[in-house]
Length: 209
Image (tube, rainbow, N blue to C red; front, side):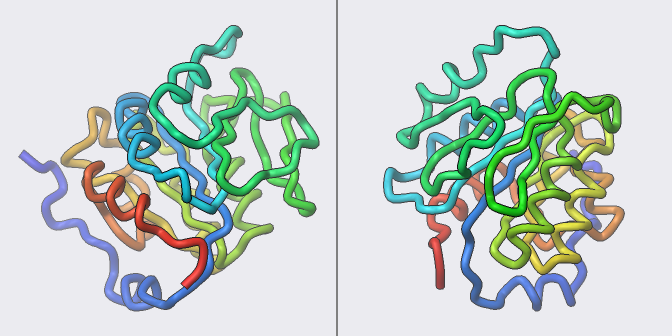
């Protein structure tokens, strides 16, 4: 049974989300239960998908991480673990390395930080979302997936404040619904989608409209 059947994005947010906009960067955050959804999302992306993609998953901090290798088998786009200073490249999937916050710099390059954990996590979804929002503004699309804490909710609020668009996984489809539910309750979701709908809409998302 869907634990949040009455929660939906507010009307004003939906009305604003229908505006045509460019999309240069997609940021995705997830935790417990989010890996299956990320596999689904990346498998749906066509080779022509133009925006850059940046992913934060809550993982154990000790390398090696096999996440890049696992995701590359599901995605036709190049999947990399970026180094500090790397340019954020269109049509490429950038995965946060274990034990590091991944941020967006003003020149649209990657920054990596060993600052303390945020919401008990490093990498932190909030850190990525907030830094990306300040740089990409209305050209940013942020997706928050299944997870067991509230990381990402504040980041989504920043994305919306800077004019970006936010999608949140329907808590009724999440293995761990706390993360998407918190974002919805704080009014941070423009749209609430099942993983299948999210994958279909993301695959069809143009670089510009």
